Length: 435
Image 1 (spheres, rainbow, N blue to C red):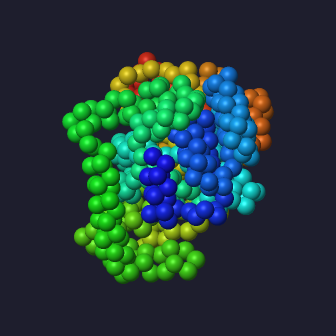
Image 2 (cartoon, rainbow, N blue to C red):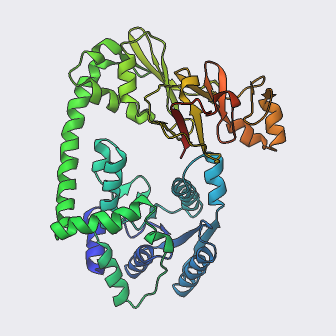
Image 3 (tube, one colour):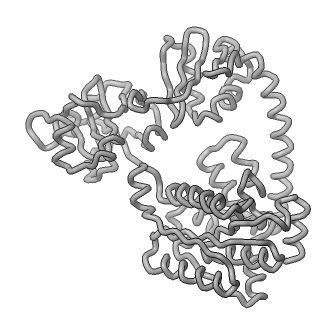
């Protein structure tokens, strides 16, 4: 494996003998094998370990293992401890997303601090297969089917052409111990579910699926290159300006035979995913605005204008009665149900559908806002509610509200409004849930 590993690095021009590398090492089989292989090949490496504090004593044992391995190999080792759950809660993102953001941000700091050229991560072919199915299940467009890149900016993946069983065999051959993450067998996580249930069935049908997968990825990447050339040629007539704002010719877009895929490719780099809604709005009265995490998109009379989002306080997102979910300014899904349940959860609220006037608005709160707290008589200013709830300044700044016809329905993640609650006269429920 060592020879194949070394040849793969040369063949794909991943890095040179002179390049100092940060090895992102968890203590698991994959990252330990990567570290051993790089060291055995005499590449200059430094360890970087993230303790996410998600598995109590296990996390500390992982850190201890990595420190001892670095000492045994006489290598420099950087370790950082994160309050991952707190970070996820404050930023309204999943634990997995929080860990990823914390990890790569810190690794880049260490790379700069140590004057290293690249960050080596231990993704392998099985990870690539699992990611492919995650993208297929969640929906990602054609880019989600191109596979991971063995080199992207400062991130390198030297093990991407190797399978998990090869990596574990190599560690047995080297008589090298490693840590096992207990959360990797928990099927509540999509990746683990795919690994345990979907991939084995496919490999039973096609035992050489790993090779088939690699060949298909290569083909898909070639197809994507052709696709990009065709799309870019048609985009030239639609994109009017890229000087400050991105300005598109609305009429040329909507009369194109490829309008859906063209719009998707045009708005994808700016974080928009509402292709269908934007296209439908092109035939409505002008003035509709859509948001991504970094930009806003305006449907004007004969243009579509994309500009940088500078003031998030002014965001007012409209939610139609058939919209399934949003990913900005918060992650939330919606449903209509005849099951009339009241959820005692800060992340889920149930409303009387007949009392709602669509479109619903989601915006930041502002001074002077008031609502009728569920279970209480009369109204209350949001500023007073926040004081009573002992919310910090940062928590208040990030707080969003859901409104119907300018009436507050829900201080999202905190308290519903009594005027929209389910009663014995309710026929259908409208459910909003944070995720």
